Image: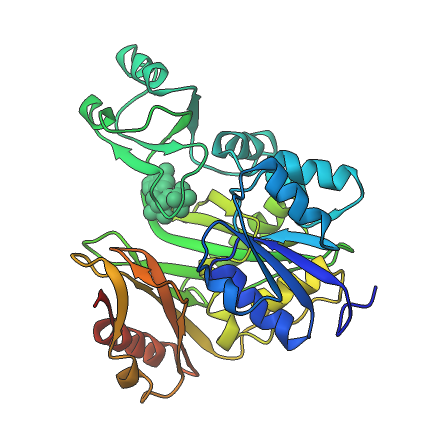
Length: 384
Ligand code: ADP
């Protein structure tokens, strides 16, 4: 198929920042794109050929959108799966496939896949609702503390809560959930795997998430992770094993815990571009977005290695503000070498909403880490 400067159309479900960064690659190659998103001012709107406003969970909306494109992909997992299955059964190319998404979309189903395929993961129990869970605490079948996770519709930590007493159950939504053993981890790691429509497979280097000591929020994504080579090798091998289970076409981000005794446990996966791979735009030979595109089009994959050390700082809305967004001090960080801000184009900010990120590249990791801290302390995302 002729993709470049042709009538070929790639459809993207979801019009957020991940889609917007993917569109930077489709524009580089002059590939035509349609995007569907519920929000009238989604970040993708300025960068696609045609924008459709509609509900990603609605069967007809997703089905009708899919009918108009040649290949369909998504930048968010919360899409109508039945519509994707219907489109695929009618011969439409949907990448990653609905079969992959079906094994991932529900966290309970996803965790069961790890158990079935002997992939190391934290122990868990699955419950239909909160009553069922509470009953198991009372019967001592479930020990406190544990990590509660809703199985669907959770994102960026909103569907996750540490439960230390029965009292903590009070404000939880009454939905299907899992209770997972607390993992005493010393590091959170991630490996992005890319697998093409013709089966070529590569991994990006292991990255490390550095947390704020008090706020328990990821502050920096650091590539390569500052860990022992043997542990990094083990993390990559496990990520490839996970890819064998889900058989994605496109990207698969595998989030993992490194425990105190250097065991690797898989936390969760995302079959799409991922926050932990944003550094790759500036630091890698081929960014995660370009490789996602290459993979779903069945083209040769690009080099996933890094050219330099890369650190990513998320720009999230400051606490105590909400409304029309204002970025403070971007000019100041632009004076520093190797610093690139990405502004997502969301007009409204609220506390902790992801509004952009900054990548820092440097030959020297220690220097990159120092600059990252300076960036973090300089920029603020507030409201007008
Ligand atoms: P989300 O899909 O919202 O990103 P995650 O499953 O990644 O949810 O959980 C969010 C965060 O909660 C993780 O990054 C980690 O810091 C913490 N967490 C999740 N599961 C566990 C666990 N079993 N033990 C300890 N901490 C956990």
